[in-house]
Length: 124
Image (cartoon, rainbow, N blue to C red):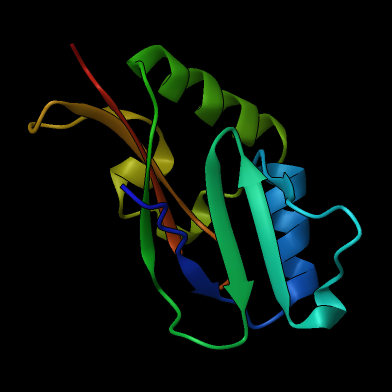
């Protein structure tokens, strides 16, 4: 199968770069790249995302992990780095990891542009 890389819309590439590299675990795919180029390519442990001023806001992206324990550890790490969960107080899955009825442990993170990263791992 070929690799699929979602492109997320960003209203401010500098802000997106800061959020994804300082709060989440992403790094620049090409360290010499700059937001001034109009596109960002970020990677993290096999996952890849691109950011551009084109596209649509509020795009959901599933990120699958191996174990439910990884879900809990990752959420705790992101909270320690300043992840703000106050924007979605009505959504329990944005407030912390939950065991879903479909067999996954999940938590969701909204970036500053409303794109949602859904971190998922099987319960069993």
